[in-house]
Structure formats: structure tokens, C-alpha cells
Image (tube, rainbow, N blue to C red):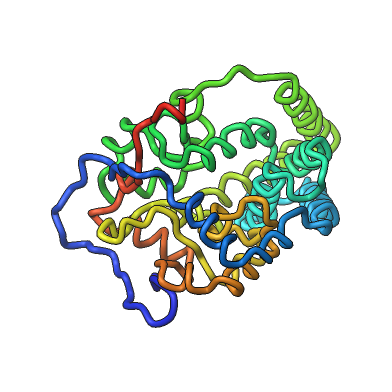
Length: 335
């Protein structure tokens, strides 16, 4: 893992230390992005011109959804070994791309009208196999507004996760099944009553799943589910789950990290994560322009060039684990 902008020393996993974290890293200041956003906009007001949707989003989502559904139908008579291989090396990239498209749409970055973004999110959800688009938006926007706030930001692992997942074996299992933790954690930490849009998302998704099984069989549906599962586990694309906010170097006090590697092309440029949290109203395809306009705000921040190496370092480093996250206490304004 290469850290920082410019010439920075390599960060290798500490596999020899016996130090064991037993608590989260606590911050007693506000999250850093709002203040940095104000500073950057005061110095570079032209960045406001980047605000707004990416009008290519509809075409990109439609192409990926069509390709993935066609692949599922094509594989309806294939051997399970072939289905698993295609799912890992091909379908996983497509479904993870759609998951990150849903992330983009949760910020209303395809259309000016939120309603259109919500419908496109439900459409992008179809090959993923499990209804999640509408619920994801609810929790993700809180992750931005209340980053690290205990009991609100469900991106942070629970205390139970942190106490159980303490070694290479348990961390490997956690990474492999991390989508399940992301899916069920909100129900425990910050449960919300589902609304009509969740039920609509559920009805449309289950209808597609049933049609897939009825007309093309369990193998086509199995391909979609496998693509989602393997793409969110021990997979290069899934490295962003760890790279975005896990603290590898607590001395720096940094709680958000960017990735500037080639997989950004497939990932809606979510790797520009500091830039994204600073300016969530800028589409991913334009975030590189933020760094180009205001380089002095980002070049000295630690960053990554390999999501795969982030996963390896997380699993192999004995000092890393679910506790390696920055948290802050709820304040009056939070509640």
C-alpha cells in the first residue's frame, strides 16, 4: 500500500506486533470535511461550477444492467463451476459497479429531480438480486452528515464485531462476508421504519428475481447473487469498503482516505473519497477536477493506489481490525 501524495514511504502490514486494540479511536472535534469544504470554496469559488448531475449516468447504468442480465440469461444452462468463475472475474465487477452507481444516485447525481434518481436507483438494483437501493440512501446520507457519530453512522462496525474479529482468520471471514455485516448492522445500530419506497423497491426486485427463476432457472439467478456476494467480499473492488475510513496510521489523525488507482474507472470514481466527502454534490466523474484545482488540500493526505493491497494489509496487520475506526460522541446538534 503506497500512502500519501507524491513520494511517501510504503506502509507494510505489521505482522509481528502483539499490540491488540481494544477500543475505537475517539475524536473530540467535528468531522473534517465541512470545514475543509468552506476553506476550499472561499479560495476556489469556481469549484461550485462542478456541482450537479452527470447526465451520462442513465446510459452507463442502462448498459451495465443490460449486460449483466443478458449474461445471467446466457448462463442459464452452464455448469456451476463456470458460473462461479464468470461471476468472480466478470459479473462481480458489473454488480459492484451498480452498487456504486446506487451510491452516486443516493446523492442525486444523475438527474436534478430526486424522484428520477430514486427510480434509476431501483433499476440499477435489479441485477444485484437483493433490494437495497432505497434503504441504502437513508443510511448513507446520515454517514455523510454524521460521520463517525456513535449510534448514527452505521458504516462503523459494532462493538460485538470489533471484539470477535481479532485475528487473521476472523478478519478474513469478516472481509469475505462484509456485505452481510453492512446489510444487517443498521437494523441493530439505528433501525428505521421502512416506507412506501422500500416496499416498492422490494416488490420490483422480488418480481425480477421470480421471473428470472421461472423463465431461466436457478442458475441465472444464482449467477446474479454470486456476482454480488463475491464482488463484495475478498475482491479488489471491495477494497474501497476498508480503504475509505479505516485508520492504518492513527498518529496522523486522518479518518478519510482516497484511492487514486485504475479501478476508479469501474467504481464511479468513489476512490476520490476525501474529495467526495468534501463535495458530495459533485459527480464522481468530476472529482478529479477538485484535486486539480485545489491540490494543496489533498497532496499531503495519505492515500492508496491498490485496493487489493489494502485488503491484504488489513487482514495481515495484527494491529488492524474493526476497532480501527474514528468515532465521535453524539452532540446536541447531532440529535
